[in-house]
Length: 121
Image (cartoon, rainbow, N blue to C red; front, side, top):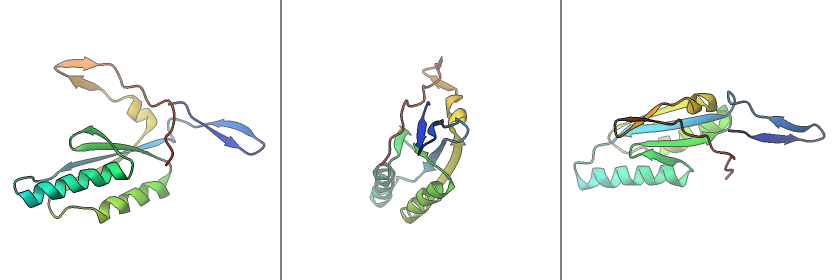
């Protein structure tokens, strides 16, 4: 990902791939009853509503900028926790994202290209 910030009177400043951060929310929620399925769907929808993108059914990714923003998202997720199941949140750098190895249909796939620009909400 190549991103720039503009500082007043100092010109553009390159953001390092070690400073840009991602968070992965992964979860295992029971869906045996109608109530559990509803809670799991509601939780997934909440993640989408706060800017996450689905990577796989139980894995959602989102860019964030700094520890304060990370903590804000954690609190938002915490308020939306379903009654049952396990949820994990992993922070990692853009450089680590860039080095993810992916297999699909028993074949190694090319590394994903990081987004070209930041989406600001």
